[in-house]
Image (cartoon, rainbow, N blue to C red):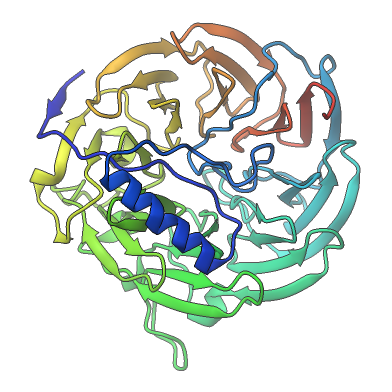
Length: 462
């Protein structure tokens, strides 16, 4: 397993959800930090317990507190509804307040769409044409970023840089930006694919790319990788914080979504890419610290795909291309040294799939080797490892709920695995090609996206 241990970590509190006003939300975060500092327990309080408002769910880590979820189903049995989609896409559904939000791109015309479905029936509530998109060489498309919903508005980001907010009920566009037109062209080999983050009453978008290859344009900001923060109600840009790197070539590029964490020192936004993990202030984006390089040999093709996880009071990072994992303390300032590392390991690490955190354990899907591992986040040691017997790799990230881990491969085969011991409980063929959307959980049901359909699986709505 090749786990190397460093000194013991300090504990930090688990996440709470988004959806409150900024001042009240930050007050809660300060109280949480005090509680952690005193060594008192903090309970996870999801943003909206029965919903799945953004890509990694209500707790930002792939976990849902929902219960009574199915183990067995098919494309016809235990299916509440299925809906044909206007096109393909890797965007994971956002389920909020009785609506399901998706993006899609048409195979023939490359037109991109934003749409809302009725969560009870699968009927289309509204559909909005956004504009032309693209199909990348590795399966990435303009419809890869996942939408985010807060009950009033839904926020869509496309790989073209189109960022817009729509009224959740009517689909009316409330505000819109094009990030490439306003801040400069993206330079990412396999095209842009990160999702926005809604947290603490603000909307965050990360653009981590090979900015040294972008030609400056008069009237536009100097090319840079950056973290952008907007007012979700108005779309007003609150700040744009450049994020420099010492990486070179494709190693400068990342497909990672910002991750919010709470630490004894306060809330932070975590970014991975450009050979480092960085921690940023939630209010102005300033950088607190930068991890040791995960690419000390300066390999040129080390793009970052998997996001970091936060578990056991530690940030769990991954080395690009499945070449290792490491645990990092969330505190410190400036350029951190290897003393900040608690453990590192080379075996069974993810390349594309972001780890799942559930009930104090870390679930890592090595999508190329089709291996699911359950780790102790404080030590990096395995509790169990299970091989998922399939020829097709996994690029969707695992979802956890109700004591089960749900994984879907590119061919649309869903594996249901017991979280306690890794036993494979079922394997269900949903069909399709290029299935890259993670499974969403809401109201006791699974929302499973294949290449042409969205399935709602499980019990009738409560």
